[in-house]
Length: 279
Image (cartoon, rainbow, N blue to C red):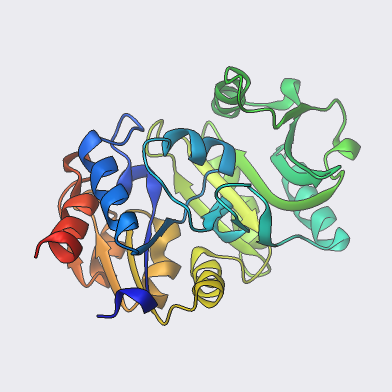
């Protein structure tokens, strides 16, 4: 395999990160060593660049990164968007209206005045969604949260992503069924809290489509990826080689070239060290 034309792309939560949302010293050492040797390594995550950068501080990722499940490709150093998706105005209204029709008020993610923000209505947040908002408000580094007080403020700016966190998955299923044929919808459970999540993105947006764009930017012709969850399925389907950690969902294991160790045992780093550094 030619390193110069291969992109190694890893999911973060449940894959590269341990259960406590950290990277071990060993993983940091391996990632830095392969970067020094010119290996193209990056990550693709559902996180924003703000939270992704915070949990990956221990490693040097100088290549562009994929965030919000493929809605953005960003320069990892300057955080400048190299590519981004967005809904049309009609699509924004359709998606938000579907949530409102079922008494739900999702978080809306948009570029407003050149900055990435997410908007929320505090009094309309359920317990799980409010816990998520609070986790961002506690961080002095995360300035994206934007409290609004009426639904007509929710679609300000260029909206690219909706997320609704339920206290019961039955709240979210009707919206998922209504929108899944028109948009990119991911219905899953958070690996840390087990709260049900419904994420809505423009049609065609995925980790796979973003990975292909990133490969084009880097001049790569092969994709090797690592993952654990439902939102990694498209990336696995597009990859030349795909490796599921042992804690991955069954569907991903079925698609995998092989199942490697657990994320709490630095499985991705151990694979990379054996494949790329053992000489």
